[in-house]
Length: 314
Image (tube, helix red, strand yellow):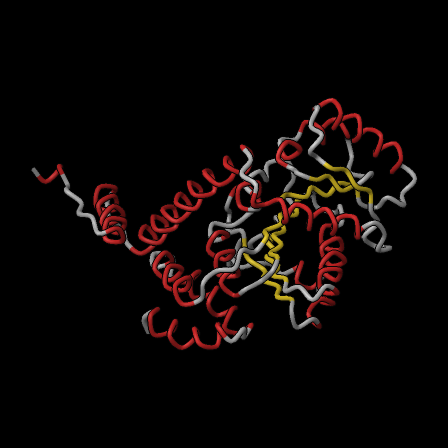
């Protein structure tokens, strides 16, 4: 069955806010990499995207990201907001699928009708995300979520891709994270809009908070915020919710930082799409490098109505 037939079977239920149809629409894009542009374009025409606010949550493994997200989402649910959650999980080395660990830890959110959770395999993608992240975000916007939360795979210092995929990035830290010097040197510290020290109930939290305040002051960046919370005890998360809502209201302002985000987001979207096409074509045949090149370029040209002229034939 062609993707067009499957799409037509799903679109009416999708527009009716059927979460099963949403799940199948995401799978449709993931399973039809080469046609993903066409699918997203048609979907946005049939179901215009909402101006959803995209929040990135990142941090090392064990700092409490999943518990933090679970508590934060419950606050949004109380405000009757529709929340989409994308959890980037490590890939299985055998099947390539997601381990689904975060879905298990967030099981308590499944009782809310206005919350949707999607676990996605990173499949070796760098930057803590997955190559289809932009497509999945676009689909969720067309579904009409008020906010979309993206949690990275949790590898640590190099998850900077999330800065461009999301409108705001929250970095979760823990007083027991280890060597503070290494934390402050991490490139991920630079891309965060907000620092959240979780497990504030630990004895070492006061010292760690002082170190974080000194770090922020040394950077001379008054726009970055620092919060101390205990996700396990559900303390301090209301301040995070207020900060996010304020950021969303200010989103319409065109700042240099947002312009950089927008430009690189478009570039990364196209780069990921082209990489997906290359991977898809190279997996299906044993052509030499020149034949593969021609197929990739012809595929791209066909989408934009262009024509590829191969000089090597002359």
